Image: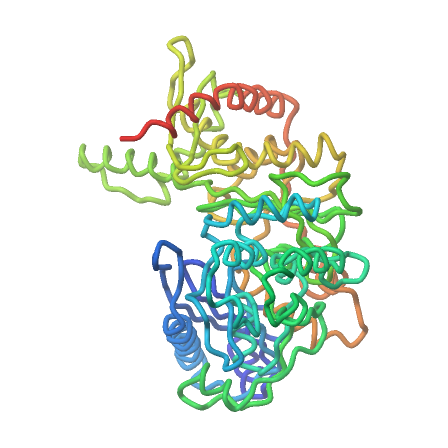
Length: 532
């Protein structure tokens, strides 16, 4: 593989994908067969600035440069060469949030990320006005909240974009955004593949009394679909990405995308009637719909695939963090009695022990709310383990209850799709830390969603690989395949991963658990109200 990968890089045929995630910036270089051949990364953390979560402009660029330098170092180590030219580049990042710039390209207020929840009044007003669920983290919620707060900077806005859109703009000079990321700014019309004209008109009318010198369409990025030309790397862009100066300008870019879209690509879940579940620190499911839902639901966000199909998204703030805390408790016990700890082995044994538990967890309940959980109406986090004196309290049921709890909120949201809206799905793919122990998290999720779940070896490659694949789709698709067919035929070649279907007993057990879980939510609410 080494020599062919080396030739791919030296001939300028490798493709670069970069994703700015919430804890890591990652770069992946892929070959003409869409396989990763080198990678780099940079670790970063958001900061609380004036009560709002943010990353500074300096952190964005120093992080991006360090990540690219890490990729260069990996290429030199593996192949003894420099990256001088590329076939394509793609940029992806965490979606939503608020980056507002004036006409001099200066940011007006620090970048406000998706984590900020100060937009409740704006989101509620817009949801009612649009008759459409507008989440707290969407860009339009941030913009309207700034207007409601009377923030001075709003009158000076010349351009409003997301993190991926910003980085792409600075590297190419183009004010564009992939449709998936754009759908997290303001809703998309699935027919026109543009921002909803009806909602844009209602918003402009709503804020008309303010007399701002702009209309909404004036300040938003132009929407592009997967495969469309999104500009080229400029000389100025090279200086911002590769401080060594080896990389040449002129590399074509695919449309910048959000992390949800690149996750769909990386799990081959952009075709209608497919879906994916990302389950790690937080979790979300993305189900690609055949048609719009019958009505808006507060716990379901509507976004799109990178090629414009409607997607129903259930986003949960909490997943495995509380479970990890309990595993760490067992680690401390092992250390206390002098047993060497291998964390992979510990997770493996505890997860597998859960499979021996009762299908309904013997009556035990776990609320994994490290932070607030909008789907169940919890404004703050209070992890809580609940049991009655007569419940079957043993290790297997204890671990099973925590695994159930890690996907409980996800089930509540998806039950609306599958039970109330009768959404049909042929394949759901799981990826993320919950699935690391083979067959356990997968089986739990299958019972929760009453659906077979597939896990692929490549799912761990993540969003940087996903955006690199979108770059490949733009430059290596001579037959003009649809994105779904390109992924199916050129990337995954029929590899659907290993599938696990739930048994009737497992489904009945999870349903019994979730009914107890919902019935006891007032206990969790009381815990949230209790201030220490």
